[in-house]
Amino acid sequence: MSAPVDESPHGVERPPLAGPQVEQVPLARPRPRLNALAVAALILAIMLSPLAALFGHIAASQISRSQGTERGIVIAWVAVGLGYVWLVGAIVVGVVVWRVLNG
Image (cartoon, rainbow, N blue to C red):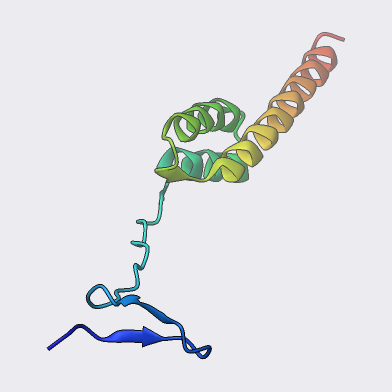
């Protein structure tokens, strides 16, 4: 018994088929985990804490060094921005209070 031969519509014979044809399906990569420090920084930012800037910078650094195993870079940078807004606001309020108290 011979191997099956694939015949084209033009009557030209092709070499025998080499075993079963298996479609290769790419393996699904695990979803990157959310950086917990980025979430903590965002929570601090929502609570009007200037510490959000510090935590956000640390989280952004961790995410960048994770080589794709962590996500949340946008959350971290939003927290950084809000943290700096609250820091400037705290400084302005402090200066105003100091001027009012010292005449």
